[in-house]
Length: 95
Image 1 (cartoon, one colour):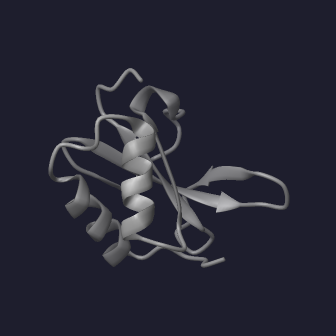
Image 2: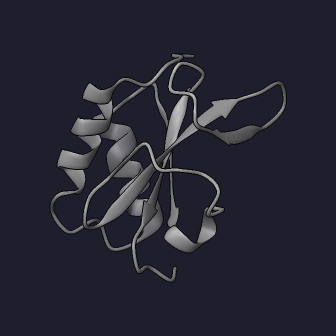
């Protein structure tokens, strides 16, 4: 599993999100996973993320958060070096 997320990866994801996203969270997640194989990518609504976590990157459509894989589960992190993937939280989305 790849560890660490750099700004070039975040910029590439934001570029993919610069156009209106796929119609469902799962369709968008599948599209992003196809574009960036080997990375854990989840999609959710902005309201699903605790406000104490700061986004790693954002644009008008979404906020991106780091995810770290622990022993048995995934967790949000503010540490790009520990990140194994991302969560894309769509703004103003209620899915």
